[in-house]
Length: 301
Image: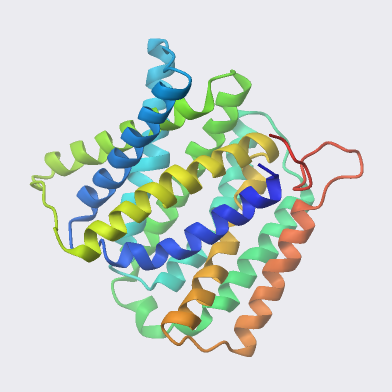
């Protein structure tokens, strides 16, 4: 699929998952994340077995995929779900843009890939844009009351997500097959949060309401199998530093959908924020003159 379409697909789907997640909060977030990635992993695993077979991995590779899955598909999502119990979704979105900078730092330390000045500059533009976009939600009360825990959870979630994203690049360098590795990431991530829940004495719970089951299926099929798989493809094509700019695009999609469904009113400040985000993405995703292929213009499979 064209790389531009992959970027838009991830942004559109993840922009809509903000609404679906609100229907999940009636059940303990650990178990909600467990059901989401267990369902997604089983579906993707079945597809792999039917289409190409499921290759074997070494013990050391399983250990790496377990750690990656715990970060990418388990603990990070649990922390994001939990953070919204203490801070507004707007503040969570702003803090989530820290994944841009974590990706740059972890890529430098782990993969020895240099930090590009335009990526950092575009990241700053994008973060400012999201801040302006969400400014109406960041009232004093939401920042003062019990916000410390929620902010820490959101930042830690971004750090763990970044580790998982950079690990996807390492998997590409080691020629690990993409879909089987994503499948194991999902299954290991779901197993991790289930173990955390049991360790905390949280018994399994489920809601049979139409809203919960419907949102769970949507999050598993579209948010995880569809968008997360596309996101990993993007990471392998353009790098985790550039792919992370989806995190500053999908809040715009979420607010646009909110304007259609919930009557969100666009302000001049919000429109200015969208402008900052647009400029930042244009800067970072513009194909380089050297033809390195790291922009979004490629049509690679």
